[in-house]
Image (spheres, rainbow, N blue to C red):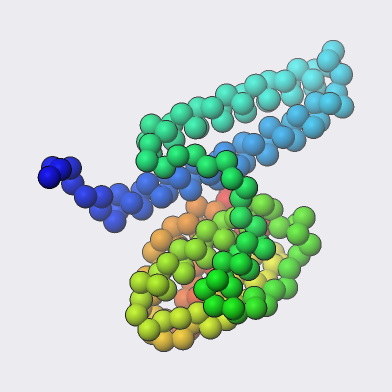
Length: 197
């Protein structure tokens, strides 16, 4: 029998936070690198701008390598995934798998909802559904999605909604600069469209 202690809830939450932080930072650095590479094709080699862009490309590439090495050291049991990030369509599929709720959505054009924000919304929704599964007698009745100054996902629950543990969902939302609030039978997720500050 192993003498190693079983992972506590706090340890699991910290490990999850490490993975979330890694995903968010890697996504942002990758965006910077992508835009710098696109701009570099329009800037001559002899210009000061070209030299600066080369420095950005080099530094961002090194930063990505260092982030992945640090992630492997801190959370070796959580290998880095290079799968596409979930989007708003994946969110619809996630909620429909729970209950065919026909997500009522008033969306901005897809191009105006950043990929990172859509992925964060999906991950928060995942945690909310896991919390529902762990709460007897509470089920998802309906969901609405709205995007204006921020992305808002509202889940309407039936049963003792006030007993659902929102801790992990709030942690994920906070990593993206957002929050999760509860009002009666409604749990609302708010995420800034600009991502975490």
